[in-house]
Length: 396
Ligand code: SF4
Image 1: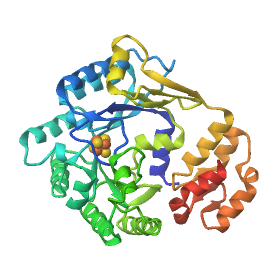
Image 2 (image 1 turned 180 degrees about the vertical axis):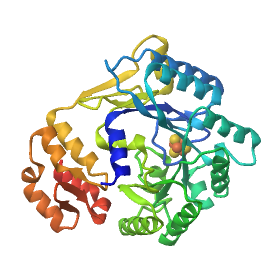
Image 3 (image 1 turned 60 degrees about the horizontal axis):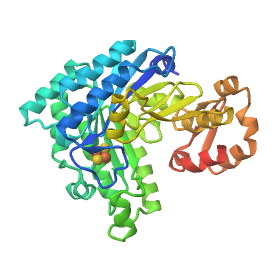
Image 4 (image 1 turned 90 degrees about the vertical axis):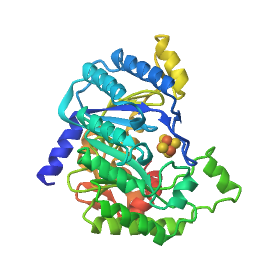
């Protein structure tokens, strides 16, 4: 492991992440299953007040760790004003020690900022001034027809213009989300999207296969035959192509769906895969104490505000992980990272030898070319990353 990786590992092992959920969007995408609602300024004000109050009186963990990441997710957090973001950040800094140089990410949508809109450019500069140093934006596809089909509010041309606006505002760490396997998308269409993204050279790429959630308009359209179903073979081809193309362009494939330029892994998201604590605020936010406790907040934004205003806890679900739960989580989360699972660390944490316990499953998975064991590290192969659910089911 080189010095840079060691530093990243040390960083993610010792600090917590703070997640802030902002549940507002300009419109609803056809595939969306997140807790979001339409942006409305009065309600946004009420929500921010509730959020600040939740952070101020939070006492879920007796001695919370210092934070090295703050992540504004949603929804479209960039719909909030800089003043509202400042209020939230102040509450976080008052409640938690936040280390100098913390990674502070904001999710944005291309339609919510454009380089031709001076006010929006000012807004981006204000976000930078407030310490936001990483932008994650939902490009999804560079094809206008696919964007319309998904119900996105931006056009393909707005992706590079937003990217330029972010650079001009001083953002040196930018992530693009792209989705593969959209209804009717061809391999060459996907290739075109990857090429367009790589030309801009963002520091980070999150590349997902379309997940069709029950109850979404897209799921309904597919079940009624209005849109074609995703072909599994084509999806596999897209995934393989993506790994080859993106790694050939100099990006590191560090998690099943995530790539970065050297040293620019998402510090925040890496906490989810390495069992480090994260404290979530806002409706539907999830938290983990880094040991055995998980909890999550009320999903509905109005009910969430009502709970906070009535001085009640917004937490609606708490789980105490059993030893077995903690073990299987550490396997399927740890294996998501392409560097693999450290078998020695697993042994010292759980007092059991994973290699012996799953000897026959591991032999089958290895024969099928899905995993490899290299001394004390178990990791997915490229084929295993594509069929990761089969590996997780075998080792659950
Ligand atoms: S922008 Fe994101 S959160 Fe908002 S509706 Fe679309 S997919 Fe959902």
